[in-house]
Image 1 (cartoon, rainbow, N blue to C red):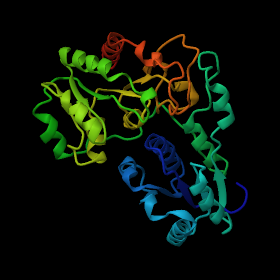
Image 2: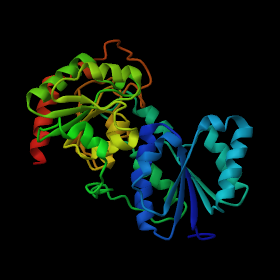
Image 3: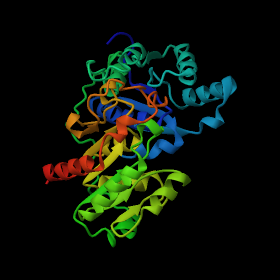
Amino acid sequence: MKGKEIKKILAMRFSAMGDVAMTVPVLTELARQNPELRITMVTRKKFLPLFEWVPSNIEVKGIELSDYKGVIGLERLFSILRGSQDFDAVADLHDVLRTKYLHSRFRLTKARVAVIDKGRSQKHAFLGHGSDHSPLRPMFERYADVFRSLGLNLTLHYDRPLFDLRGEKYLPIWQFAGKKATADRWIGIAPFAAHPTKTYPLEQMKQVVDGCRERGYHVFLFGAGAEEAAILQSWEETGVQSVCGRLGGLRGELLLMSKLNLMVCMDSANMHMAAMLGVPTLSIWGATHPDAGFMAWNTTPADIIEADGLTCRPCSIYGSKPCKLGDHRCMRQISPLTILDRIDKKLGSID
């Protein structure tokens, strides 16, 4: 390692939820492989539960971005972070204006700085060529490359479970689900994503929910916000429960998630959270593409459901652009029966 040995490092990632969730496995591996290293992760306060089970040499600081607006606010945040510890290095896992300012200020203190390479040009070239383009570098490896560039040892072991939550007790889960969820198989279904082009049509997803209930699976519906909660509550019946707002926040939802036999989701934060908890996942992809680098931790193509043969995919790396064909065919071509068949096969494979 060149220069001063790194003993204390600051890492930064503020959004989005799925991207922050993807830092958890990388930081966990880094901490375990470098037990002498003290890691401080700064992120948004609402994401703190994602880091509850990380190793003890990781400290996570949660902030409200609204408290640090503009240059004056960022300078105040810099002063707070610098005052908390004398960092030897800074890992910018976000590379946006906010983190650029912060890492530039730390560079002036002689801290070593490494910044993520998001591969923007490679991602742009990938648009519309998912079916005939080689996979892009996974975001997990891009995060890990930041720490490697600082001379730190880090190898990602995708086949190792990150956390063992079998001993975790959380009474509200059992008060909420224990008496009602008598089925042997618990399935989570998270129908929503950040953008409409990443969301399986709700009328078709309702058929999937009904099919799971008819098969004797107990279904827990995951979502966030008043609008999503209202939709999911309208789907409730015997064997189907919405968890929105009923488990005391994200921590409770994560604990319930860890008890599932399977999570069915979109290319979304729920996909990443379930996977990092070691829960088998089936994710449904539309406008985005798993080979763009955003597949979940310890998942394979066998865990993906997508329409074949569409040369328009991906039309967006992050799903933020409207369907240029106007019919959302990448999702609508996937039938509910196809998803139900994949659910049955997946559950059969993990008996």
